[in-house]
Image 1 (cartoon, rainbow, N blue to C red):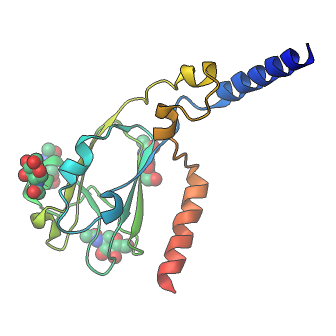
Image 2 (cartoon, helix red, strand yellow):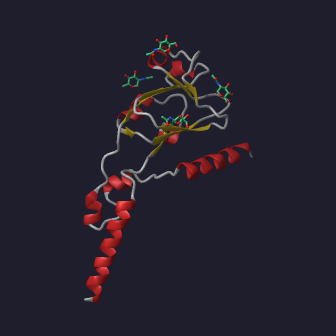
Length: 172
Ligand SMILES: *[C@@H]1O[C@H](CO)[C@@H](O)[C@H](O)[C@H]1NC(C)=O
Ligand SMILES: *[C@@H]1O[C@H](CO)[C@@H](O)[C@H](O)[C@H]1NC(C)=O
Ligand SMILES: *[C@@H]1O[C@H](CO)[C@@H](O)[C@H](O)[C@H]1NC(C)=O
Ligand SMILES: *[C@@H]1O[C@H](CO)[C@@H](O)[C@H](O)[C@H]1NC(C)=O
């Protein structure tokens, strides 16, 4: 009896916790994975097996003395023209965060000639993330596959602090 009640309370607590979760956790993608933003990586291939949703993040990690990160339009992406970027995301630390806060295709290139060598990526951002896995609650498993895949939850402030800390480390 007592045990059943405990289980019921636990299940209710779990359901309540699940109801507090946002529709889906935002994902932070480090562009290029372990290689980062550099030469010799085909970013089209890197991006093609990923789905980017509104409010996900991109994290560009690169040699601040060489590369940079510019958002351009489609025409300029194709021709590697960096004369009139839509947005200069370069902050100077070699670690730049880009919020994918618009449902559109973002086009990023590196200036300084690197775009011609393939340092460019088009990121197609979709409207909403898929609904959270209800089965995770039902099966009582805290680590179902979808939630594990989308586990990198980043509250912007926390992330900004982490980026600032990284920048500080770079300066040392
Ligand atoms: C991109 O910007 C250039 C220069 O401002 C312009 O000539 C071109 O038409 C634009 N392309 C698109 C797809 O908006
Ligand atoms: C982008 O911004 C950085 C940091 O403010 C600056 O050093 C750089 O010259 C800018 N690059 C372009 C192409 O505007
Ligand atoms: C997206 O984020 C950028 C950078 O923080 C900001 O300048 C821009 O206003 C945001 N756009 C929307 C639609 O929220
Ligand atoms: C990346 O790979 C794709 C698919 O194989 C290819 O079409 C594209 O030309 C490559 N891009 C670069 C910059 O090498």
